[in-house]
Amino acid sequence: MTDRILLRAGHVLSMDPDIGDLPQGDVLIEDGRITAVEREISADAEVLDMTGRIVIPGFVDTHRHTWEASIRNVAPDATLDDYFVDILDTFAPLYTPEDVYAANLAGSLECLNAGITTLVDWSHINNTPEHPDAAIQGLTESGIRAQYAYGSANTSLADYWFESKIAIPGDDVRRIRSSYFSSADGLLTMALATRGPGFCLNDVVTAEWGLARELDIPITVHVAMGRLAGRFGMVKQLHDLGLLGADTTYVHCCYFSDEEWQMVADSGGTVSIAPQVEVQMGHGWPPVMKAIEFGLRPSLSIDVVTTVPGDMFTQIRAAFGAERARVNADCWKANLPVPDTMLTARQMLGIATRNGAHVAGLEDRTGSLTPGKRADVVAIDATALNVAPVHDAAAAVTLSADVSNVDTVIVDGVIHKRDGRLVADVDRARRLVQESRERLLAAKEAKSAA
Image (cartoon, rainbow, N blue to C red; front, side, top):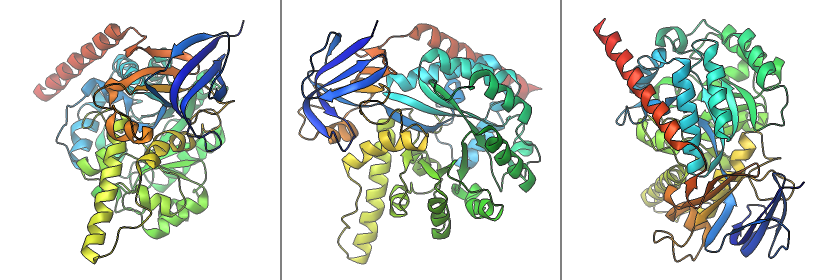
């Protein structure tokens, strides 16, 4: 029997240029797939009244260390340099598989609550073989669409982040690939989260890139951020090693030279930018417009909830404000008019949805409300006082709405948030992540006392 959901009479922002916007439109979902987006649809289906709602594709977060949900806000004033010591050298070695499971479950539900339907889980917490299994279990139970990016262990800052000689264990990556990701059609897909040149010796870099390509999984790597990676010329080094390719996502990219931007563009690589982290922690200016100037389609990501909020509305506004501030200041200083290429509110919505799906390698199944794609749909309550009255629906989403306005969230045709409330055991997830917090703080205290 066909399972049908009809989203009726919403203001539909499809993000599909062939469909456009429907100020009053319907979206029909059948067996988890979008089958029609039209002004009016008649169907035998469960009807969700979208009157007063703005209907959009789900947001896509292309880089989040979800395991850090247990230590939310533990480093509110941290710089990037602080983060390496306070998080990777202090808390990360203490994480058990149970901590990873609790954080991934709670962190994924946090995403769903905020309208993020697709997540790239940059999981550099694989201290034992049980850690990745726990991370994947948390993602699976939440019901989110996710790319699980298998990363290194983090048991020693010196061993893993300063000219590391330790490669990600190939046998365990192969085990995870065969155990959980034998098909590329499921809600969960796989990537390799690598540290890259500057952080690792060249033979480690070459081995990890080779492993990913042997297993036919994409690669995601932090590059050109702050005083640490900014000085390495990482893309140039990857180019010299013959490793650049369309399968690689470059995260941050704040200190690329023009030569490196061109290398990424020529290779078909993709870009993930974490604007709030970058301006707050000292990575550099979020290079959204720079990526666009080189023909790339930048995406947005949250990065670390140890220090910044975990929602996409924050990232949209951080990128929008930072880029326009930078351009305005340069133009004022040079006494020139601002260019026509200034970022727009509507552009930001496309960056947070369709571009994100592109960067995650999932644009064939999500990122826009297009018949044939999987049904990852979010409805924003536009009757709330912080959103109404609506003059420009895209601006209402990107510049006015917040997590409290996320009314409905659907992933792969399954309703995960209805009438503003998650359809999940939130109390259990909260209890698990609070227990993890207490366990980690106790372990940290014991380590300090030893």
